[in-house]
Image (cartoon, rainbow, N blue to C red):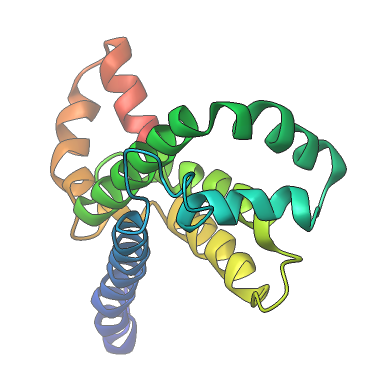
Length: 173
C-alpha cells in the first residue's frame, strides 16, 4: 500500500514528465521557424545553411564533417526540407504525446547531429546540446507520452490487439 506522501507524488511526477515532453516539443516547434524554404539560407549563407556549414568550418568529428561537406552541402535544399519536416514532426508528436518513445529517439539523433555540427563553433553553449540529449533520453526512459498524452489513450487499445501494427505502436509508445 502506498503512503499518503507517495500517492500525492505520483501525479506530480507524471505532470513533470508531461511538462518535460511538452517543453522539448515547443523547443523543436520554435526552431522550425528559422528553417525557411525554399533555400533554407543557402543564397545568403545564413540560417540553417550557416549552422550546417559550421560542421565543416569547426569540425567536431572528421567523418561527420566529411559527410556534411561531400553529401549534405551539395544536396542542401533536399537536406533542408528533410530537416524542416523531421523537426516539425518531432515537435508535433512530442507535443501530443503520440509514439513518444520513437520520437524521443529521433530527438536524440537530431540533437547529436546538431551538436556534431556546432559544438565547437565559437560562442555556442555546449551544455545546451548535452541537455537536449539527456531530456530526450528521459522522455524515452519514462515513456512520457503515457502521461497526459495520446499514448495514454491509445496504448490500452493497442494492448488488446496482437497484429504487427499494434505491436509496433506499443513499442513506439
